[in-house]
Length: 141
Image (tube, rainbow, N blue to C red; front, side, top):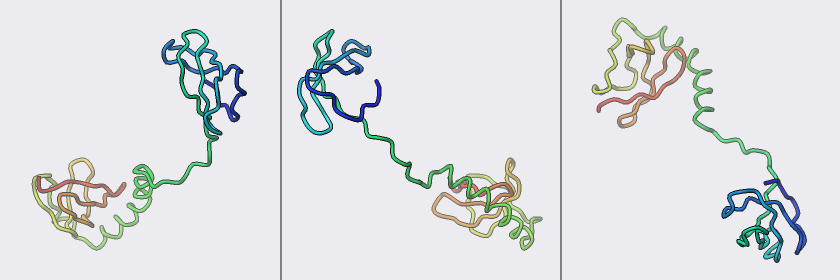
């Protein structure tokens, strides 16, 4: 199925995916129903459907996705972690267990991620700054 920017004239053929034939077939344009759509009929099986113009691709909008947030947290985390590491006593780090509850400004010792500093606690989620990035962990389950 190719991108068509202008509706083909009535009685002309257009190559389109036929769902009934399960193949790309020529369809005859029966009538224009609006400026962007037309009724078409498969030349092989006779099934009728609506053909709509494809919209030209516009510039993608910037969205703050999870991956974008993750990239941002990777750039912020090392400097924040170094600053917190200088001020905190890492000898009193608490071993992380998702069953325990924690408060902000607690130093954690995570088996996989190492020493981390809790900067935010909301319900059963908490943000922890580790040396490589800021991560969301659960607690109190």
